[in-house]
Structures are given as structure tokens and as C-alpha cells.
Image: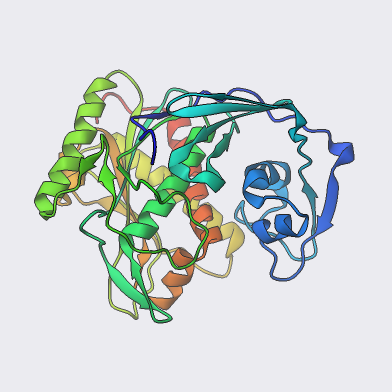
Length: 349
């Protein structure tokens, strides 16, 4: 990746104002997703993806899935008035009243971040996806293809970063890949070229890897002293093939703010399951687990998230479907916003 990000900062402030009377309306057919629906209209689906969601948010399941038979508005973007200003790390784009910012870390097709709000303005988030570099994490097979935990944890982390940026947050992506942005494939190709923040080589030794991440986060935490800061670590669990698990969360036993963050995201998942899967009980939990190295050693209030069991067929459907990965990121971000808006508890971690 050219111009590796040292920090991803969102300065998005303009609202999206569109002329509704000239917009096309189409009906979603069986099997349609947002990307396929936009492709059918002859559009680049990645250019219009975020705008489509913003326009149709009240008519989407899980904020990303279409309802068969419902009508959806299609963005009309006039590219004749595009003005682009290049810089080393980012470029700002203005299309009439639409103001956006582009971040190469998300990949060419997903680089554009549109402002949704300033709900997280000036809040700082450190995002760590599990494993990476010489360590792929948990492994599994699907249809004769190999699955690696680090690839899916990273994809969800990038999607979460983009969501947080769209609400005005300052985001540090601690583990990053020079050529893998957000990917919409089901089977994510496995590689070993991930690096740590500052373009640091990820050590082979497990303890050294974890210590490197702790040192990076703690140094940045000190640099941003006085700001609202949170750490979110994302993993995909590995258990017996037959064990289907829900998303669950860990926090430091003595961190009231870490517990509040985990609880806020957990409550969001409970609410989403109740709304979208009323016949299924959500069994995910949040609890302290200070024995985990990153939970114990890092300074910001944090939550450690396990997305699912990569070896279980039902959990694989949750992890492999790119729309589901987007929904997971969206739900986590809503929990993060809930945590931020409810304020800090004293000055404890």
C-alpha cells in the first residue's frame, strides 16, 4: 500500500443532500443483495454502496440486507462536478453537496467514506485484528478451501474502522495488510504480508507478537492522553466442529469503562437478534477475562470480541457472507456509539 497510514482521522462534516424527486426506484428480487442490485442498474456498486444504505436505511434488514419485493431508491450521482485534491495519505472528494474522504487502507472499491454523523467526534479507537503475519490463527476448511482466522478478523475490523470514521472518530488500525482492503469474497485468500502499525514486521514468536501490539497501543494511548480512548480486539474462535456459538465479549475485571463498552455492544446484539431473529435466543455473553494478554496489559478501556467458531458450519455462514461481516461491523459500531454517548465512568481505565 502506498502511503501507509499512521493514523486514520475523519474530518467529515457535511450532510448528504440529494434530490429525491429524480431518483430511480427498483424492486428487489429474490437473491438480490445491495451490490447485485446496483450492478443491475449499470452502476459501480462500490461507488454507490454507502449512499444507497444512507438513503434506504429504514428499509434494510440488519442495516445491510434487502427485503425481497420491496422498493429501493437508487442514487443518482452526477460526476461532472467532481473535484479531487490529492495528498500523500488521502484525498478529499466533493460531488455537489456530497463530501467524502478516501482511505487507501480500505481498498480501491471501498476507499470512499461518507459522513453519517459526528456522534464520535474526537473519540479515539484502536482496532486490533487477531493474529496476522506469520500467524494465520485458527484454520478450517470449507468446500475444499482453507479458511484462516486472521483474514476474516481483519476484514471485519476494516469494516468497523470505516463505520467509526463515518461518525467522526479517530481510528488507529494496528494490524494492516498492504494490499488487502475490504473484500466481498466468501473465501478470503490467505497471505502472510500483514504488518503492525508503523510498518513493523510481526514477530514469529507468540509472546513477542502480543507484546508488540501492547507496546504500540500503550504508546499511542499515552500520546492521546486526555482524550476518550477505547481498544477493540477482534478474533474468530476455534472450537469443536459441532459447537455453534454467538458473538461474545471479554473485558478487564477491574475496568468499569471496559465492562461498559462490552456491555453496550452486547446489548446492541441482544436488541438486533430480538428484532431480526425473534425465534432465536441470543446466547452471547460479556464477562471479564483478565488472563488474556491484551486484556491484561493494554492501558485503554477495551473489549475483546470473539465473532464465532470458524470450524462450525453455522458460524461459517455468519463469517463467510460479506453482507454478514458488514452487519457485524455495523452492530459493533452501534454498540460503540451507545458506549460513547453514555459517557465515561469516573477515571478508571
